Length: 170
Image 1 (tube, helix red, strand yellow):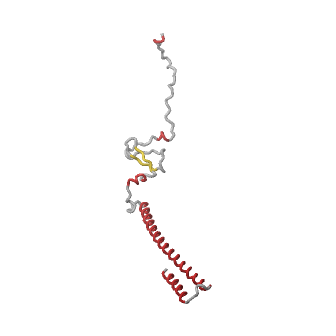
Image 2: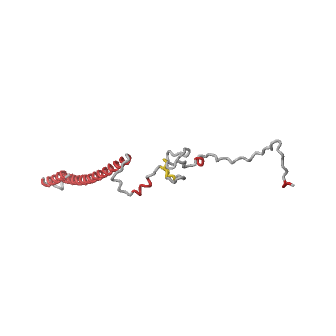
């Protein structure tokens, strides 16, 4: 950039050294051209400075992105990234069981987790701790409750059985 600035300064000095009349048509034209060239050099210099600043900023963003990509790839592989583990673990507890259903066994109070996407109440879900069924499936599958026993049938007395008189009827 310094080269352009030096060349414009040389042209300005050359015009003054040639004793070009600044009041003539040619002198005003040459003076205006040299002034415009000086302005162009300033604008280009400013653009170059801004470009350098943006280039440094993009470089830092690229480095940050590379760190995030590495951290994500480590997380997908089951590893943990040292760069992102500086946060408190308490904040991550809510995300630890995303997609899981937490349920406490009614028999042994053991906490059991089920995958929310594949969970099916119609299957028999047993507690891994005590081995008993965690859910009473009939409560959730729409199964009908057992019907109460019907009224006792009235049957005639066997033949030859004598009927005893009811003392209370007298």
